[in-house]
Image (cartoon, rainbow, N blue to C red; front, top):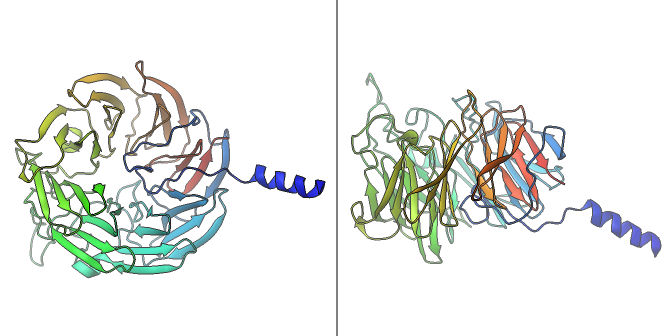
Length: 432
């Protein structure tokens, strides 16, 4: 009996205590806010590392976590898109190949930029190649499709950089936004400046059948039509709205039909070219916060309404505080927005007034990862792999500067008092 008790004790000590899930790159509530808890603020590539796993390929996506499962996507050269499932000790359970990869153009990008999303039963993955799949937790393919083949959505000629949007879950569906320029036709000297095949599409979660496809062509100028943002789903049950930022507008769509309910814009009143939208919107307290103009503005928009709500639903706009790539966080009556060069600004949601600003350490590298807020601290990774931990209380201060020495564009994942950190080709679990 004593031997059995000791064995059980060893198993309990060796097994992680799992309580937190991280179903998509925005975290458990889809708002870039993690769970309450005491998360580590200081580490290095060798200190406070529970485990480290070198992946066999490159990817920029943020892992999804559900109980004892970690889902991560990557490319193995130009040969294949892969999705792998690991346990919380970093041991691979399975991996599945999903079509040939189309590699990233930008240095820290990949053909696996879109992040996986899970509903606790299945995991859904998407790649630049257009390959989309639903898998169960044993690695069996439930259904698969290719969005480019279905809708002529070839990204090679219609977006200049890399597919960045991630799929999101509505009540019974999976939703993807494709926003890009029209394809260059044979004989054209230059690519067209307009969009003629941008859309939002909904797939049935269980079968993979297309529920609806809603065109979203807003006549934005050159490259401004190309957007890489991830939609937001608000509401419950059959009363959900899909919010899409890009091509100079924010649009709200009925989740059941795809029909446009309202539109706000233009966020580009002078019709500037090259204002492609990468940073996604955030929501809180009945408002949407839209970073735009390649970091030139952050606009607060009241949610709801019908038709053109530009005049009626404008709340405030603050110039020069947002990022080209990093998505802001809205929580606790505040918006936390960072610039490409590491200036972090806290804005009061009710008034649009700046509460404080904090300059992070200067570097030649930019901040492309989106930050996460958890336990009163904000975690934000710079492109060179330095992760800053900032106390965002009344007197904001940097409480951790953690240089990993590897490039990072994925968002840190905070679960069960630990930090799951993904570099381009390595996973680290940081903490106790």
